[in-house]
Length: 489
Image 1 (spheres, one colour):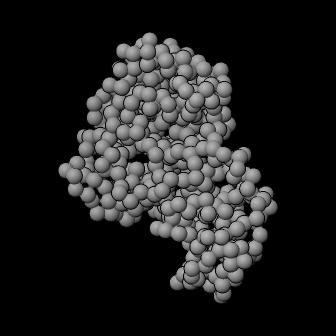
Image 2 (tube, helix red, strand yellow; image 1 turned 135 degrees about the horizontal axis):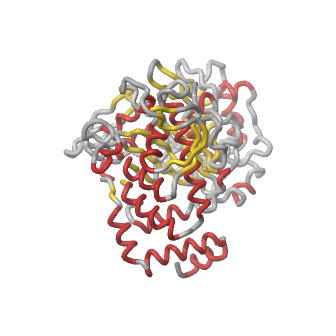
Image 3 (cartoon, one colour; image 1 turned 90 degrees about the vertical axis):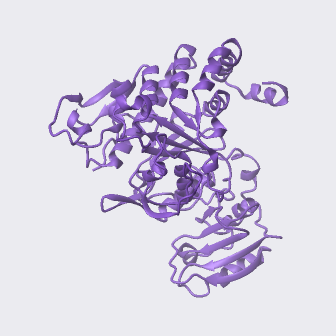
């Protein structure tokens, strides 16, 4: 690293960062052969399969989709991968790394969630028709290729969340097993004795004991069995398994952090990880992966959170709960933590300093929609906005709508204006889903107490109103007790 940028980074760098840069230099210079080996390990998927109509970028931060594949391709066959040669998605979560690089959250999406799968590219270059009410994990199998269809899963997540996915990473069974061995095992906890029959309910008998109740270290095939088991614990659902998978990822992060930047540990881990990964072209080299990993180094374990998308059962499938899910996606797009903090890159800079400044709408056009049955609501809001200098381009009433919470949608180039406007609508959700301009759909929250003044103490555009709730459940931190909250039901 050279030049002005390098000097600035040097002044901010903590001691572990200096060690990590030394390791990076080792990989790229003194051990160039190993760097080339890592590059040779990495597979990328075809970005031509990504949707042509993708969401715009959020306020700050990055979104990384992590997919666990249970394909039988390659060495996975010996580890109990899925049936046949079709790549299948076993688990998935969306990791949001906040702009301040001090917070991160992983949002798990249950494999049985009913979603809309948008058009996806097939291996022959043609595109599928959209499908409604399909199981989330079926997106990965579109095209029935051995390595799956990560681009289709990314398209589906972007459609579900309204968030732009910056990177996608697929981890297969064989690589996962190797990574846990490379770090010398991971501490996990089991809420009750688990037998072979719990891992394979078609076995027909209880079989041998796989895991005794309590805390223990697992690696290799044993670690893989731990994150796959779901029957015989709690209600036997994928929701309970997700809780244990979140605990496992937390524990693995703790293990890697506890070992420090030790080349004896990191080099085997890097080798195992890159062998297991299929990534988008934006992460398709060792230096790009290393750069992304280094961007996470200053996040405290307590500030790495895991939640599950708000859900409820729909028969033997899972439905997304609204408006709680939209509140969660809106908070990520605004780079707001689940406890309401502004975690943008400039969270303590100009944006915070402007929080108490008068709201001025000079030169900004807004369209208003009454999302309730309360008469005259859009007209009342229009009067407030006009007093602030906004140009109200139209008012209307949504047919048959009963919107609980006010939504502010913005188009290209309007993000900053939308964040400022949100100060006049405390508790509103801000999202970049409009084709153009700014559209405010008024909810019952505004009808109950319309305000002409910014809410005290709310950062501009933070929408510090109702937080994501419903069935999202208690957030797990990476430093939590590995035995806490392991089963659902």
